[in-house]
Image (cartoon, rainbow, N blue to C red; front, side, top):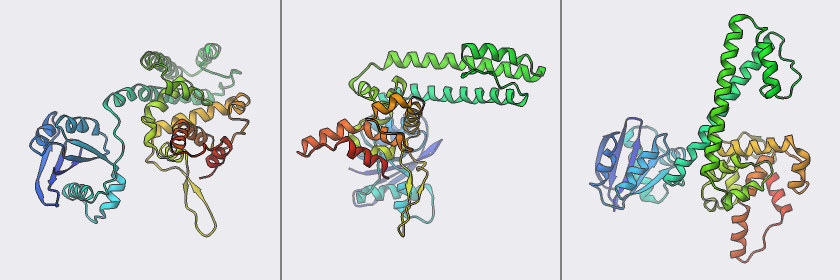
Length: 344
């Protein structure tokens, strides 16, 4: 067995191969052509671990590593840099540092979702992109109406059936060029709406109501779209040691800097799963809009700022209960979980 490390970039990868005792075997720059990384690894010992950082194009790199019969190890890039402790930074130093961490058994790795799951994630993620673009265009139309004091339409949804009819009437009152621009924006909003509905139909046809999705649908504020997003982004929920670990991964817990009896809280870290964070925040927003019904589903717990975290804690509850039963320990009550959700 050998230790192999890839310092991957957009157009090339610097590969470093070392023996078990740390002796450098070879280093080579490999251009990013399909099959090039696989060809390089086929000249190495089969089954060797290959460390590659979590960069934007790691999907196909992991596929090449697996096709060559080696073991991919996806590295948490920020933690690895801190653990290397290098003052200078070059491609060779980075690759050798990854191999050094592998040899010491301290390489900070993250879970690699299977190829099928990575493919499925593109459906809800792309839908989220279209929804975000549609919201931006809607906001621009709102701002245009406000510029000319035409924004008071007395409808709750400006882009609903009745609101859209009133909107077209107001657009005719705008100056000619502004009216033309706003009409084009409205056309884009309608086109994006059709694309979003097409994605939702494909999501419904692709993802059957599995037991995991059905359990997620019992959470307050979670519908089919959010249930699919949570299921795909979480993946194997058993990989989280506790509900608090999942909440931190989802970005629903603030930073804590406690010192001298003072405990200030800050924003969540940027290196979280932002798709999962969006899903939990959307569920919390839905609860805020329907607080009467949501309070009954939450065992009459009133709304608090940590509601999104509470929902994320409930996702891992069935797996956590199974672990407690296997260990012969009692299952925590709902009041105990509610208390842990409120703390950070």
